[in-house]
Length: 204
Image (tube, rainbow, N blue to C red; front, side):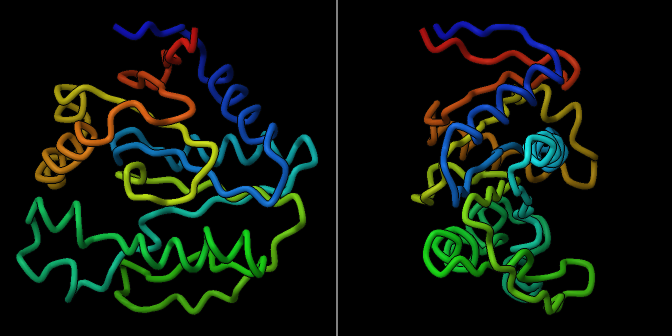
């Protein structure tokens, strides 16, 4: 059984920032977690810590790479399989952020606006030579994306059901099923039942 080392929210930010800082740019990594874990909040804190140390850092939310409503809701608004396979455009995320950043160095912060269901018309951004981009959102791991380093925020099914808003409860099965297929392949695996009491998986 894996063992976990308790830490503080600040300690978790420091550990994540150190993992990104250890890689020379450009770097595209991930903080993978269900919406109930708010991975974008941790990503913002980590990016702020990196910037405070002089490292250019930005975040990309998976929710800003969502597919148009006509595609993701083809089989209904609460279809679990669709949420896992159709809702987010991981191919576009790879093309416009991951491959772009390490190739041309010109990347796109947002692809689609869920609220307006249209393109936000973001301008492409030119990355600094030591740029860090942190991709944050659910079900990122296990898709063959060249993300490094990776942080995985894990929550039990019970915790997910307790903390996910009722209107989004239908997404929990998709997140749980995906997590089971992925295993513990992240560089940092974090037990995140309570955001104020995280614990990091011990590596040895």
